Amino acid sequence: MPRLSCIALLAAVLAVANADLYTSKSPVLQVTGKTYESLIAKSNHTSIVEFYAPWCGHCQNLKPAYEKAAKNLKGIAKVAAVNCDDESNKPFCGSMGVQGFPTLKIITPTKAGKPAVEDYQGPRSAKGIVDHVVERIPNYVKRLQDKTLDGWLKDSNETAKALLFTEKGTTSALLRAVAIDFLGSIKIGQIRSREGAAVETFGITSFPTLVLLPGGSKDPLVYDGEMRKDPMVTFLSQAASPNPDPAPSSKKAKASSTKKSKSKAPESTGSYGDWSYSVVDEDEAATASAADSPPTESPEPIVPPAETPVAVPSVPPPLAQLGVPEDLFEACLGEKTGTCILALLPAPATPESELSAPALAAQSSLAQLSEKHKKRQAKLFPFYEVPSINAAANTLRNDLGLKEENDVELIAVNGRRGWWRRYTKDEFRPTDVEDWIDAIRLGEGKKEKLPEGVVKEAAAAAEKSDPVAEPEKAEESKAEEREHDEL
Image (cartoon, rainbow, N blue to C red; front, side, top):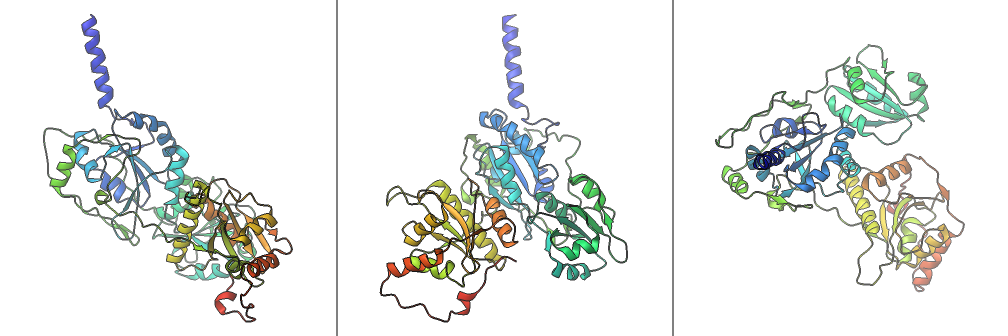
C-alpha cells in the first residue's frame, strides 16, 4: 500500500505539472502557436499575452492578478496566455524571444500590417497590467465642439455616426473599444456637456448620453441602457454590424509531440477599414534551435532586442531645460507668456547622484507626451524641466507654497493671465499626466491665482543673476508672443 500511495502521489504531481495553468472557465484566453495569428495578431484590439510554464512558481503567483486584469479588461482588450511547456508551442515561444517565465508582451495593431510587440516591464499587479494595456488602446473617437460638430455631421452624411455627450474631457477605454468594433462602419464622436448649442440641438438633459445617427434622413436614436460594452454594441448594431473578431474554437486542439509538421501560415482573410494584418514567417531552423534550449524560470526575463518580432519605439528626446532665471522668465513668467508646463526638479543628494525615481518618472511622462503631440503635429503649450540650480525656480517654489526642493513638482503657469495649477497625484504615470494636461487644455478644474510679484520676482532673479544683461526688448518676436492657452 505505501508503494502504491507513492506512485499515486507521483502521478498526481506529474498531472498538475503538465496541466494548463488556466482552465476553460478562466477569463484568460488560451492561445497556442497555431491560434496566435488569428486570435491575437489579426485582432483589431490591443492584447497582452503571458508566456508561461505550469511548473513556474512566479507564473502561479501571477495568476490571480492576471485573471483579475482579464475580468477588468473584458470587452476592451484581450488578456491571453500561451503554455510554453506544451511541446507544440515551444517553437512559437522561441520565435517570440521567450527566455524566462513568465514573459508578458503587449501586442498592438498597426496600420503597417504587422502588429507592434513590446515587452511588458510594469508592475505584476492587476492595476499595473490594466493601466499599461489601456494606454495602448488606439483612439478613433473624434473630440468635437459646437464649432466643429456641424462639419462632422455633414461629412459623409449617409455614413452612420454615434455621438457621446459627456461631462468628461478624456476619452474612456470603453468608448475607444467601441469605436474599434465599428471602425470603418460607424464614426464615433464625443462632445462635452458645456457645448451648449449641441446639447440644446439634441435635447440632452443628462450625461453621459449616447445618440446614434443611422445616416441619411433617418431619425436619431437615443441609448437608454447602461454604459457597458455589450449593450452599447447591440444598440449601435442597428446601424451597422460590428467588425468580426476571431473567437477561440470550442474544441481544444490536440497536438502530438512525436510528429513534426510543416505548415504554411494562413493568409490574411481581409481587413477592417484601412487596417490589415500579417505575420512574418520565422526561419524554421531558428525556431527549432530556440526550442532545443528550454526557458528557465525568471521573475524579470530579459529578451534580446534582435529576437523581438517588432522593435519597441525609441526613447523620446529629453525635455527642453530652463537652466537660468532669465530663461524661465522669458519662456513662462513674462507678462505676455502663455501656458507652460514646468517640471521643477529636486536637488540631487550629491552632484554625482541621479534624480529621484518620481523625478525621472515625471521627466519620462512629459517627454513621451511632448513627442506624441509633436508627431501628430498638434498645437499644445510647451513642456520644460527646471533644475534646482535655477534660483528663480526656488523663488517660485516658495511663492507658491510648494514642497521643499528635494521633491519634484509638476505645475502649469500662465504669466499673461496670472494663474497656475499643480499636479496633485503622487505618481507620474503618462495617462495620469495626460489627463491633467487635457483638463488644463479644455479649461477644466480650478486654477489658482499667481501671487502678486511672482513675475516681477522672476525678472528680478534674472537681473540679479546677470547684472550686465541687456534690457528686455520692447517688441517680442511672433514666436515669443505665441499663445498656448487652453482651447
